[in-house]
Length: 375
Image 1: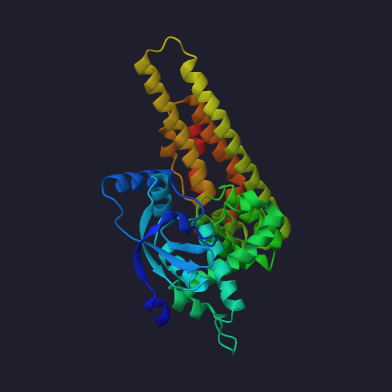
Image 2: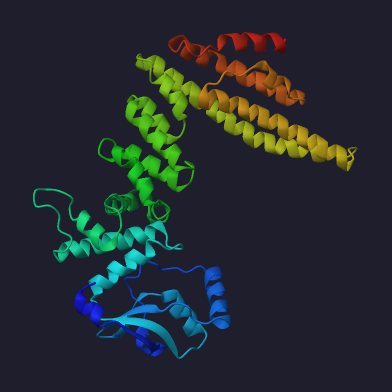
């Protein structure tokens, strides 16, 4: 804030009818629970903190404190305590970003939009000017004025550019579910293979890819894998850990067979998941002779057995962990035990093929042990 602006600061009781919210406020939505709590506080304690205003041709625009202004209006207050200054629109937006970066309730998309807009405004006005030798593009000066880290500014500005392209590919609704961190995580794929970039963004937007860590691991695996493996990972039909093993196979035809086998296993797993949900319900509710305690015990046993099968599949598909036969022998339901053995038999061929190229993973002994117990 300039010296002149500091000298113009006044602390006043300002009539609400000459105050108006700023269209440049990054915060567009307000949590109703937070508003209700603030309303009760205003009723019981009164206003604790001044709002910040600055003078414009239209009246007094809110720099900070729109939530307090809204509550005061709802309570039919005539005036509100305010700090009034003579700063210009640009400095007012600097202050908004400083304040909102430290407050809860502001979404990542709202901050991204505001930071990018303010950055472009500062560039156009010749304020956020970078090193003439081709340095920081003005991020350092924006950091100095707003306190927002240069890396964060860069992330928001770059995400806005990526978001424009994503809207054309996957639509506004899915694009708006993505954070600036999501765009930052997949940016390395954009130049090399835009189709895979779009696939990952769509899966992240629908939350098929649940976490940032999963997203980053998928990007890393795609970058390090042959085209056929990378495509399967991007589509979500091949887990990243297993993809790393398949990618070691040099022969394209053999590698493609392994990819297809893994896809088949994944489909089987998804089908099993759906079928078991129905099966558990039918097995428990269909036996009218069971007491309530017996029904609950049987349901618990079935759920345990289902989780055992799911864990078995996950260990093989995700981590390649060696699964001891004791895992299967904890299953008490014959139908589900057979499903466990069926799954292991179906994965035998593909995992022996991988094991032959990755000697550190010794699967064969376990399969022999499983075959012995199954007999």
